[in-house]
Amino acid sequence: MAPVIVWIRRDFRLADNPALFEAARTGRAVIPVYIADETLDGLGAAPEWRLKRGLKLFSETLQRAGSRLLFRQGDALPVLRALAAQTGATAVYWNRAYRPDEIARDTKVKSDLKEIGIAAKSFSANLMFEPWRVETGSGGFYRVFTPFWKKVRQLPVPAPLPAPDRVPQPETWPESDDLQGWLSRHRMNRGAAVVAPYLMIGEQAAQDRLHLFCEERVRDYARDRDFPAKPATSGLSEPLSCGEISPRQIWHRAWGLWDQGAAGAETFLKELVWREFAYHLMYHTPHILTRNWREEWDAFPWNTDENHPHVIAWKQGRTGIPFVDAAMRELYVTGRMHNRARMIVASYLTKHLLTDWRIGRDWFGDCLTDWDPASNALGWQWSAGSGPDATPYFRVFNPDTQLQKFDPRGEYRHAWIAEDDPSPSETAISYFKAIPENWNMRAGNPYPAAVTTAKEGRERALQAYETRSF
Image 1 (cartoon, rainbow, N blue to C red):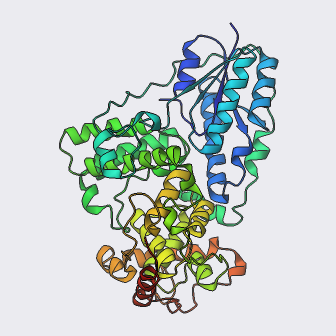
Image 2: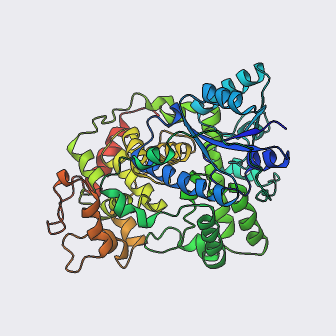
Image 3: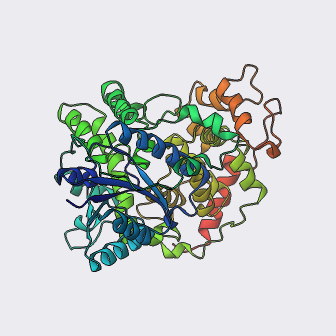
């Protein structure tokens, strides 16, 4: 009864974890292992810190289930081969990942393990629809969201798997590398104490949040989701990013509500499928992560200087545009940003400031605790106009009128901007506790003048577009 190694990646859950479930079902000893390998290189400060927090709790969850989590550092293939040799394991199971570098790694691992007689099995766990199985009528992949949605809503989504009844242990456990030491190292600095209370970590927290959303918020979701001061969204992007909940679990719960006539359930399901669409595109056109999806944008004269004063002002939430600044400060304090606000700050950077979307992509990649490579890249390219199914390049959101429309009582602004407010909120003050001291920003400073007004930025963007051929 040789053991089965379960290679844990971003799937920090017991339920609907096919690799863990199938390994436990063999009746053989199961050895879960997390490997800090080269695919973590370049991970931003906030997502790395959040991943480590989630991994720590998942390790504790496995211990309560009568198992444990091994930790190893190094390239995945030699680590797995050494662990198999040490334990006598004859199989390695894992749930699929979809980033180009992860696909290349997993393909090599599977091939090399099989060559030495070790069974290597991968499972579908973190998407509802595998990208290679969703095709247009002509056999290609979808480039526009609406037809993609119409296609996949007709496809069956497997029911979520239960958590294993038990996870059999080996007679002796191999030694682990220093997991606690690795977990304790991060680059969040003093911001960690500010962001920590906003985290929603672990499988149970994700299930509780799904229950709350379905019971209290989904019916009004279509109406309220664009108002950033309202607690109207699901908040599930963070646990999804670490695999603490599966999209199948969310889909079946929301689909049942749609069947019952819940008004906002269809809109919510479309948002879940937008994530799938992002992965579909990342799989078929991996350059979406790093290059303009539409090649005709390669010659556009973006500002590529990330140290430009206007870009610095954007990052620091002091552009003088309240909607933009409130959103950027929400990001720095909570590690997240409301979806409507993401659209506004992305539009302002790429259109009003004519700055390369990759600068925004990287800043979000450093600051978001719910960072997702596919969704982040698609969102930025959609906003910039350079991506698939993009907002028309000539559409320039007016951040002032957007704030009037979606924050008519000024609640969002008050929540995040302290300057010139006689009674600033605690959340607005907390921003100054999170930022680096060398930014030299104080709550008592006057609110800055706009680096580029909505009108000036729009006119400049339209003039730049007129000189290009798209």
